[in-house]
Image (tube, rainbow over all chains, first blue to last red; front, side, top):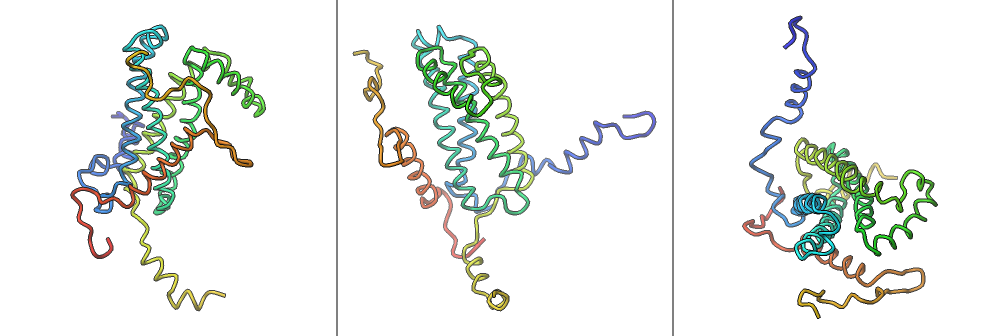
Amino acid sequence: MSVTGERSWTGRVREHAVAALPPEKLLPDKQPSYVASWIYVFGVLSLASLAVIIGSGTILTLKGPQWWHFTGVGHFFNSLHLWSVELFFFFMVIHLWGKYWMAAWRGGRARVWVTGAITFLVAIPCALTGYVSQQNFDAQWISTQAKDAMNSAGIGAFFNLTNFGQMYSFHVLLLPAAVVAIVVAHILLVRKHGVVPPLEWREMAAKARSPERTESSP
Amino acid sequence: MRPVAAIFNLNHPAHTVHWHFFQMSVSNIVVIVLMLAVFVIAILAPFPGHRQGGGGS
């Protein structure tokens, strides 16, 4: 607390945070009835996959390439990391399709949609840098093929796929941190605005057939 | 053969589908078809413990 009576920045941040996300919104114990559908499950499935990715990736980082290439348990964690990434993208794409077709940017949810889209875009180079960090011939092949795409896009000097140190840093720190940060923002925005309701096709059809619309239309 | 070998033999170049401008590996096509199938099932399959109501929300 400030001795001059002025509000401190911590107090202002707290007030803004609590106003935007009161505890009952941040950690709700009830959801609308329309959430009881399988199509609403794929967001949390993506999150679960991301948790396995981070966990298995942390173990791989600690143990190193000799371990993940030449031991049985290392092979297991290597495969766990790969398949959790495959499932992450699998679930995320279905989540994206579901939200696209229910126009999930409705009701002031534009930032929810945008943070989801950015997560998808950032996750792609995160996976690419993983493929070139394997420390095997597959990684060499992918890096020498993909570097042409980066060079043709004019970013090869800053994002050099044949530079293992740079790619590994991107893969184990910078890009995962970005993905996790954007996912946290995405979830907080979902909490703030609530889960988007499904489109009411009957209402939309009735509106389209309404006399007012017919009169106003050219 | 090692007991933990892959279920499918992966020791060959990828099979691809090539039709005019369209070219894609069979494995990628399988994944896309699976995603479409799961998407449709997720919309149509009843959710456990949830009774379908007659009216709107």
